[in-house]
Image 1 (cartoon, helix red, strand yellow):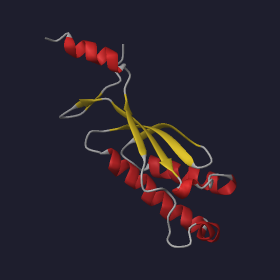
Image 2: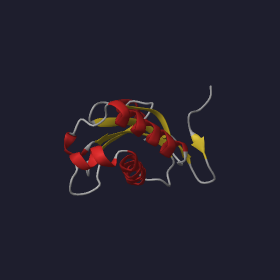
Image 3: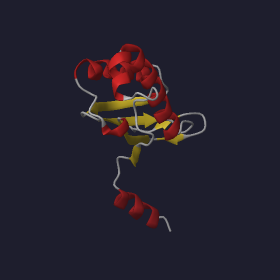
Amino acid sequence: MQSNYISTNHSKHYLKAHIILVCKYRKKLLVGQLKEDMHKILENIISNSDFTVEVYESDLDHYHFLIRYIPRLSISQIVRRLKQQSTCLIWQKHPISLSKQFWRKRTFWSSGYFVCSIGEASPDTIRQYILSQG
């Protein structure tokens, strides 16, 4: 049986997270050409990063990501990279339509985000394993 763990010089890990990024003011911007362009932009950011995205998809006003990452990266670093780079690049492609939505500054995403760590084992399984070690 093959392990899903990744081994490096100083660690063995299996880190995954579910991340949700929401458009500023919950604006339903992820439609049509803007949605297609954002998907391509995110695909490019992901392909040039030191984390992997197993799956990602959008609704009208937010994106879901299932991310696998290494211990030296924090979730906030991953989110910052996705938000900053995608905002800059989407504004380059759609300056007129976005300036009608965000007239004060060049923004796209809300300041917050949702994250939930996930794993292959259920919390109850892990709890029972830890308790059985005593």
